[in-house]
Each structure stands twice: as C-alpha cells, then as structure tokens.
Image 1 (cartoon, rainbow, N blue to C red):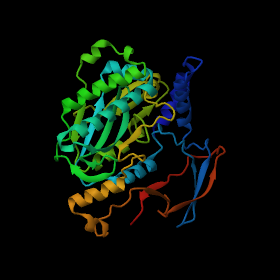
Image 2: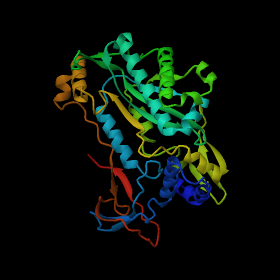
Image 3: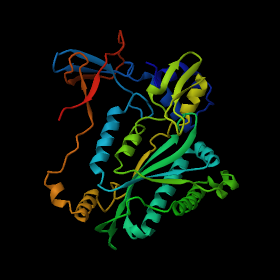
Image 4: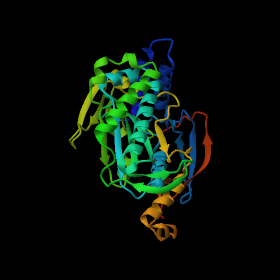
Length: 385
C-alpha cells in the first residue's frame, strides 16, 4: 500500500539535499522529520515481539517512529485522546469556534512559525475568555475550552493556519477569591456575536504580533480586512472531537489518500469543499515534499491547548464544574449512583491475525532488525466489554 512514508522515502532525499546550509533550527526539525518517517515500522528502529494468548504464534513488528507528523503512527494515541475528551464532555450544547487569518498574514506566520502560532493561540484564547465573560448570558463566568491548531486545508498544498476551539455552552460563576459558585448555561444555539469576537480577535492579534516583532511584516491593507471567526453549535461535541482526533497525532494527509508514488510523481486524493466526491491530484515528488514540509511544527510546539477550568493549572477543577452542572440539571443522584449509561472505551488492543487471540508484548528491541519479509499484519480491535 502506498503511504506518506513511501513518498518521503522516494522523494525526501532530493528535497533534503537542496536545503540551504547551515540549517536553521526550523530546517533541522524539518530534516529530522523527513528522515525519520520513512523508517517507521521497517525494523530499522528496532522491533516488538508479540505472542498470541490463543495460538502461541509470535509476531515481530518493526517499532513505529512515534512522530506526531507520521500518517502511520498515533492511532492508539488518538483513540486514547478521544476517550479522555469523552469522559470530560459535559451534557450541554457545545460550540466549534474557528479562528482564521488572511492569506498575507498567514505567510508571515509561516516565516516565524513558533512565534506566529503562539500569537495566534494567545489572541484567539484571550478573545474567547474576554468576550465570553462580557456576554450577557455568561457575564462574570469563567469558561473552559480547548483548541487544536491546523495549518492545512483540504489539499496539503494549501497553507491555512487556523485554530479550532471546542467550547461547552456555559461557564462557572466564581467569587472574588476565584472559588466556583454555580453553573450558568448559554442559550442552546447562541454563544457570542460573530462581529464582536472577530473585532476583539483582530485587535488582540495585532497586539500579539507587535510584541513578537512581526507586526511590521504584515502589509498595512490586511488590517482593513474583516477577520473571520466562525461559530457553529455542534450538539454534544463528540462528532467534532472525532474529527479533530484524526489530526491530533498526524499532519496534513493520511496514508489512505495517497494513491500512487513513482520516481517522479505522487498522486493523492482531495475532496473539494461543498462536495463529497474526491478527485485525484498528481504533482511532482519535489512539490509534494515541499507541501508536506510547510506543515511540520516547530520542535516541542504544543498544538493542543486547554484553557480556563479545562487547564490542569486551573484553580477551579473540572470535577467541581461537573458537580455544579449536575446540580444545575438535577442529575446528581442519577449520575453518581452508577445507573446512568456508561460509554465504552475506544482504545484498541492488538489481536492475532491468524486466530484473533489477544497479543501480549514479550520483547522489545531497539537495535535495527533486518526482517526477511514485511512484518505480519496485526489487527487492532476494541475489546469486548
């Protein structure tokens, strides 16, 4: 099967050879990722030996690279992240709030990604906090929300930095000492006025860029444009979490979208906006690698961030918020008694491809393994309750 790893294995060396030397910190990170992904599960990074509890067969599998940009890694981590968000999901309407930037400003962010993305997070999160606490239905409330950075559109050739925030429809009233008092809900399908938060966001982003010495690189006419902040009610928020999870542990493109890789080209599928029909794009291998490289994040940059009472550093804990909401809804006894329906975890466990028995790890090797044939297939499926 064709994959991102194969595309980078074939076309990555030429791209890396043409990078200007000495390499900047950002180019060192790009080179590291493009060198690492082609080694994923090949045995060159070592391997894991599983044994089946059913038929006792052994399965050697090359270790995964574990890089967050790899399209083949991260499935289990994504499922664990979904489980974590499900456990913390509150029984209220959620909203998906998306902050974008004009094209000219995006190009400035691409040149200084670490500083630019930090400015984008700071300006957008502060806008949610300030506009929320000033909105009539949430006045004086502390919100809790999380944001996920995306830098691509439907086609990985598009550089489109934006942040998706998932915001529960309500907040917690706090006293002067910051102690939680009670829950307060928003109207079912209303969070903020678009125009208000867009105006505040634009001003805060300009201030953040000034502090980062990036403001002067933005063409003056950009600030005359209307900035876009999209707010959509998304029910209980689970479908949105599932969508975001697909890119929590990988970047820009999945393996299943790559149709063919040869010595000159890469062909992949794109689903244009407002349609459900995919089309194929064929571009040169060099162009493909360059398109992917623009989405490689700075080393250690945190692409998922939690704010308000969702933050681990919040004085008001998520447990307090949950209890206050239960009291508000009158659900306290029903939920705490254990009679309420319990959702099953989505985390998958490896199973034997021969008999379906559960596999357990018996050995891990970190030295290169030169396997005589491709690693056997291991099935991942949800455990029966």
